[in-house]
Amino acid sequence: MPVQPPWVTDATVLVVAGKGGVGSTTVGAAVALLAARAGADVLLISVDGREGVGSLLGGPPLDSVDRVLLTVPRKGRVRGRTIPAQQAFADYLELKGINGVLRKAASAAQLDSIAAATPGLEHLLVLGKIKELERDRAADLIVVDAPPAGHAAAFLHSAASLQKVVTNGPVRVQADEVAEMLADGARCQALLVTLPEETPVNETIELAYDLEETLGIALAPLIINGCWPDRAGLTLSVAAAARAQNVKLSSMNKVALEASAEFGRMRLAGQRRQLARLTEVLPLPRIVLPRLPTAHLGPTELGILADALSAAVENAS
Image (cartoon, rainbow, N blue to C red; front, side, top):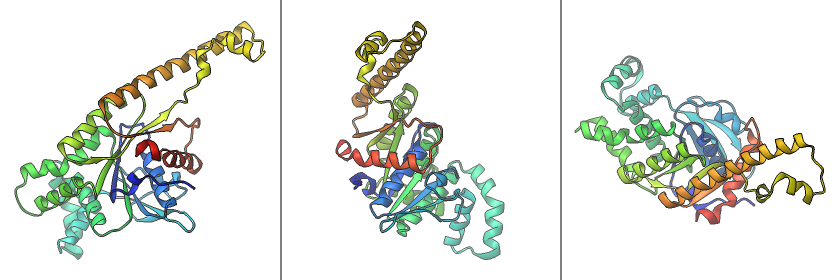
């Protein structure tokens, strides 16, 4: 039976972030699946509106409506939705007692002009909605698929930035409450995702220190996605490997296979360097996920990643 690592539900809100292209959306969906397998009611929120995450779980595309994406028989389920800033603003006005036609008019007319004059407000509105969902216990686990790393920092910094310029009123209250949630490790943690490559690792290290030291956000184990398997046979020359298997190769095949083996050796050498850097610079438990040889990720591949997360319990403890 798959085992759920403790860090999955150590906090109610798990913010998944990484450089664009590292697979943070897929990892977030795999975490949601793993938690549902263990019996949790999971709400998966796509901040950037990446609707395709729904199909990864075998469900419909995401929109602003909370919908069930997947149900694990006799266990838990995964729901999914987006949180458009416009909707978050309308919900905020309703929360403050501004109802009906006035609320609709205010939300339609004012958000663009207010947001333009208040940098970070749209991010704060979305985080404020997530905070309300967490406070209302809308799910056992809320997985937040954050914007790519370059924007994730701005997203998560929005509350702290507004605290510096807004001294009172409802925006300050919202900023204070969001900042309080982010800094409470029992309520919120960040799950950072990287590939074993130089640029993603650089950005991950920078983001990790920024979130922990500046905002006080607790960090879950580091996910290193898309790792190539370590193949001992690559140390052999093609000719030696062929002799060991009693296989005869033409000169053309030897050249092609040697080029392929050299590519594999280079990729593994680079991967080892980046893993060593992460060990030295970022003292976090880490989970290594395999590179999946497929052009299309779907529910089957997501299950493989969820199994890998489950198998990595000891490594992340």
